[in-house]
Length: 176
Image (cartoon, rainbow, N blue to C red; front, side, top):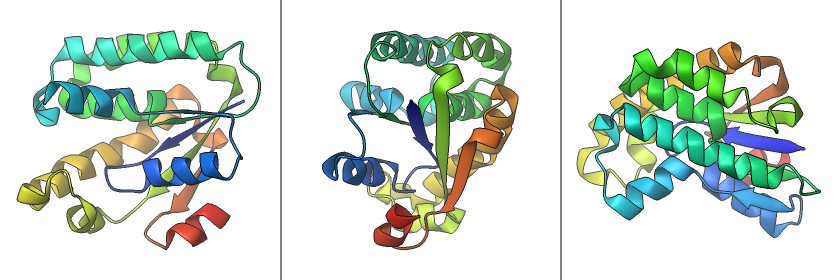
């Protein structure tokens, strides 16, 4: 089984996944590939081109292939719905091609998700990465957040995804 955790920047995805792993709820926890590349390469996240979207999806698919034969519950941050939401904002013409690639994942039919929702103002308050431009973070990641439900729907994952109000404490969100 695969559980993806998606939501905008500062929704608490990494923190929630860390707690799930620490408590032994999941056997494998995968990070957000696009975020890892952002930090490794010091990228401008709002201005990435089509080649970046393809690279992220291909790396996700490679990871999916490797995880397909592992047992237990796997949890991955952002995964395909989140990556498509980014692409929809940065490179919308890529969506049809990326949708085709994402649905080819060997984990796709075994996936369910958690969509962490927060008010967009909370992004500006919580961000540490973009503390020098909180309004930009609110605007950009607010746009990403608006795309997530659309991408869940286009992937056919909306009915397999639980939306959770992540503006509450981590303990409450975790319990839910």
